[in-house]
Image (cartoon, rainbow, N blue to C red; front, side):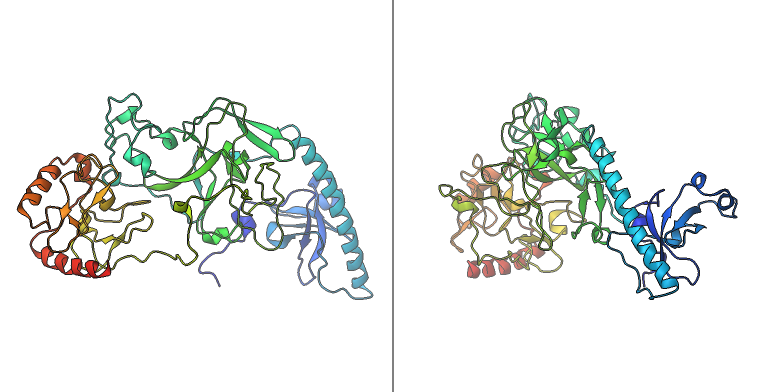
Length: 487
C-alpha cells in the first residue's frame, strides 16, 4: 500500500466527470451499474428536489430508468467494450443485461457526435492545449537552480560584434551551456542566452496535408541557429508510468508552446539538443541546415514503439522508414564516416578508480566526454559539489586560454590548444610519454614548458590544472606507473 495519501491518475490530472459522460456507479451493496450523468435542469422535478450535497450530480441508470444523486468518488469512467460482472438469467440479471446494451448504444451515439464536433473544430483551429512559456514541474519533479559561483565563465570578448553568438567559438556554447549575464564577460550583450530570453524566430501554425497541424518558419533560419525550446510538463518516473516509461520527460500534450506542433521527419531540418541553463537541463531545437522562410520545421521524434502496433510515418522524405520509431532508410550510395561507426563489441566506457590529479581513490567525479575514463576528487577540482549538467574534465581545456586541447600531458590534467602547445610538452626521460614541466626531468624542456604555461588566464584559473605538491606527489607517482603499464 502507498505511504500516506494516494490519488488516482484522473484526480492527479485534475480530470472531472462531465455532463453526458457514460459512467459506472456504485450504490450501497448493489453491483456497479452503467449510467449517464445528467444536468440538474434536465431531470424530473422530484429528482431535482431530492436532498443532495454540494458537488453531487444526478445520474440516470440504464435499464432501470432510475435517477440518483452521487459524487465523483462513487463513479468510474465507462470504456468501450465494458461488460461488467456476469449477469443472471432472470430477475435483476435481465435488467442489468438491458442496461449494458443501452449503455453501449448511448456511448457510441455520444462518441459519434463528439468526433464530428472535434473534426469541425479541428478544421478551424489547433486542438486545445494550455500555452506555457517555461517547463512546469508535475508532482515530485524538481527544477534545479545553480549557484552563481557554479556557472561556467566563457572567454569571449565583449568588444566582438556578436559575443557568444552561434557562429562564435564561445566555450560555453561548445559545451552546450547557456551563459549567465552576471557571469559572462559580455553581460547583457551576450548572445548565448536564447533559452532564458526566449529568442525564437517568427513561426506560424498551419494545417498540413495528411499530418495534422505543423509549424513553418516565417523568416530564413541559418544552420545552427536556435529555433525553439521544447516546453511542456516535467514529469517523473512515477507519473511517467501513466504516460510513457522514462526517468524524466517533457510532455507537451496538455501544456506547451508552439514547438508541440512540429511534425516528425526522417530527414528533419532541426534537431534536439540538451542544454544546461542556470543549473537545469533544458531541451532546445536547433536548425541542422539553412531553412528558407515558408518551410515546415521538423525534427526526428526518435520514438520507442511499445508493443506490436506502429504509427505510419507520413513525412514524405526520400529516406522515410515508413513507421515512427523505425530507423530511416540508408541509400546504397550513402556511407557512414568511420568516426561515427560503432563496433558491436564496443560497450560502455570503464572509468578509472583513481583521481587523475592526486592518484588516490575514493569518491570521484567522472568526465562526461565520450571515451574519456578520467576521474577526479571534488577537492582536487576546487569544488564542493559535482558540476551541473554535462561536464568535461580539465584535460580537455587549454591551460592558457580554455579552448579545446590538442596536446596533453599523460600524467596530469595539464593540456594545451594548438596555439599554445609549442614548447609546452616534451617526451619524459622516465616514462617515455609526452609530459609537462611538472614531470619533465630535462632542464631545457622544463624551462620551456614553464615559459609556455605561464600565460594563465581567468579561464584557466576557473579550471584548476596540474599536480598537487607535497603529500599528493608520492601518490601521483604511484598512479602514473599503473597508467604506463595499462598503456
